[in-house]
Image (cartoon, rainbow, N blue to C red; front, side):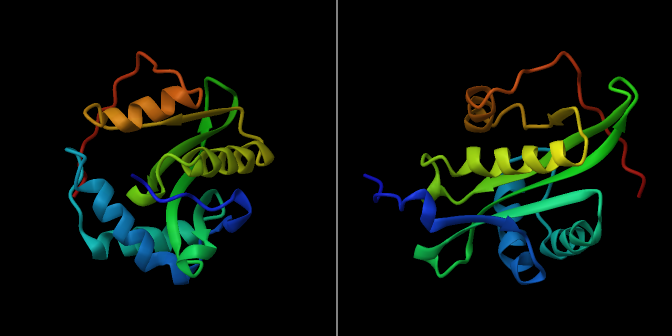
Length: 160
């Protein structure tokens, strides 16, 4: 049985800072270890997070809990793209992760909602994301919080 969760007032959703990079890189290692298209590499994750934190067209948020000495227990990142279909900005949501002990208390929804609020404030009219096709809990989560699956397929080509 899971321990009771703190009240929402005990969880702060805030912009990520340099001090959070190590925890966030650990979250990405856990996330990438279950995704077939990515392989964990802490140094690459640290480097990517540092770039993300300096990018004005990106937003990285962490959930910090008073019960964990304000250390991050979840994260989400997003980047603005120009959408020709929308004729304006679109958000690409990436790297959504909540520590297992904190899942099921609404923290993921709060992280996503905060990121969507940021994107709306930047003028974005649509949000999109990629999720591993085999990650059933993630797919169920996104469906439950109002996302719709599209008929688009993700493709990639490595440049290096």
